[in-house]
Image 1 (spheres, helix red, strand yellow):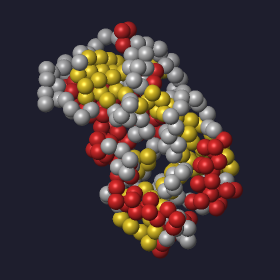
Image 2 (spheres, helix red, strand yellow; image 1 turned 45 degrees about the vertical axis):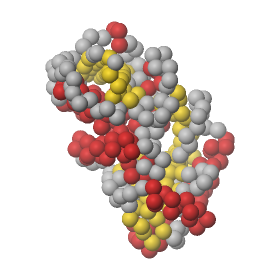
Image 3 (cartoon, one colour; image 1 turned 135 degrees about the vertical axis):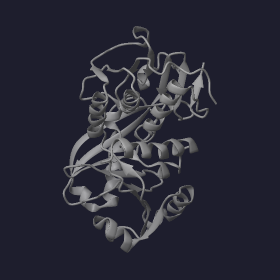
Length: 336
């Protein structure tokens, strides 16, 4: 479906330099637009939701609980990640469970695709640190992961290389700006989008050289499912919580459950050093689905929920297609 084509050479201002705004700025700058990316925080981005994200690029795994639109956008985003940042790790991801969770493990296998089963020997060959820990696993070979705190600066560098401008500590509103304005502020846009809510995601960063993993590992558990994501320098991120609360910080209960789940993956995590606790508020609409809202030259990208790094590239591609060709994706876009 198409409607009146926007001005293909219009200047573009983007508000919010997190993962959603960074991908918008990069694709628009590469397309030849005069792009200015505004960020109210400083270059460290410590106040952004992206700072506390897991960075998993796992559209097949997410299909267990997410709507099909997330898988569609996620699969397209994998291609864009590979194209724009070819050093992105695509080592796949693993799903494991202990014998008592066999029913949930089989349910996960039925609800997802793009995986193959590994027996204990094949799992040990793929991840030697997990030898003897699990009887079988699901291996999703085409999935990937990024380290948000390292990849965001890379995206910002790419934006500048493409001719875009980034202004940190720049507090602007759409009314202050001319041309096309793309609002990627997340929860900060709630004064204009009252249906947005914050969903807290907690994380713990630990350090150990006794475990080596080449890819994220998800542990299935009925109360505290966990993902362990390897980082550089012997670091691992532990995450999984999705709490309907808008306070910050990590609760004692969540910390105990995350650390206990990590110990269940490998006992050596019990001797790891805790480096950091933290949490971020993910912006979500009531249906937990992303939305591109269009009102003339004002475009709002929001509601990425827990899928920001997974779907942001595809959302940027859809926005660019609308601005340049008037193309509308009816599953994601709402035009007033």
